[in-house]
Length: 404
Image (cartoon, rainbow, N blue to C red):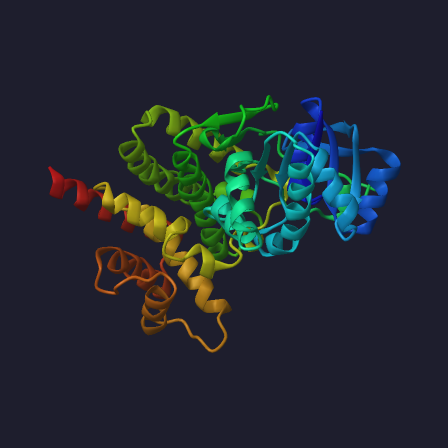
């Protein structure tokens, strides 16, 4: 069995490619980083290190090779002949890999090849639709019909935390990837064509929208909240931030607000999501990952956009009758960081309103904007994280009292 892993970076090598190899596939990585390609061609293996606060375990990922993505002929030949394919190149790079995918599909169709499932492992909402649009834009009408019949674009939810790899993490081996042990891969069961392949730790699920929202509105939202509160405390690492009692309470309660909303919307048992939150809180304490508040909270504009982790989860909560008092604290702290990093902006209510209007697409008189601005005002006035927790507690209590 042959698999293509398009992207030989941290997720490609540290997660998806490793799962494919461990599932019995001969894995060909496609990448343009010549040192990575050369190593995989020569060694046909690479090391992955599972790290935790208790130590680490090294494993060797074998039965792998690579081709350079700039060699369009060889790359498209590999795609034409594979049994399964996955991508993990980053949202901005997707458009550059489309020509090779199209060339591979055309060769596959000409040879009468069987259906191809492409597991799309990108940190991008509706990634499958984005990739489909990019591909079909360059196909004829007849090819588009063939594509619909034979190609499954399968969204995946990437839950494994893989930080930026430092020289210390590489420990003298440039191809080593350090990762946490968590390794489940939820995928969109309904998107597969010609049956669901057997891949280690893959969890096919439908409706898959629940898993996407759980990842974004529980995992990513909680992670970002932890990072932004860490910023306020002047802390460098995520594990330092989550070890602060008030931060942990705020993050946990924010995730619980999302959990209640998700449970109501999708009919998933609350207990299942609570167990996931408990696991996440423990994973955030992994000091060996050395994941920084700077990295996790990076690109605050995207994280504050209307459908993303902070505003999107808050909107879903309100839609389901849940007051997002604790999520609002994370959003306010994210707002504070956004303004700090924005050129020509100064901290203040006017700037905050501008960001919520232009970035988050909120009416500043809305319930959500009012809640976030109230928390932001407290940050401006020098409120401690404990003060913010008390404010969120009070807002939550008031909302519950109104229901009673």
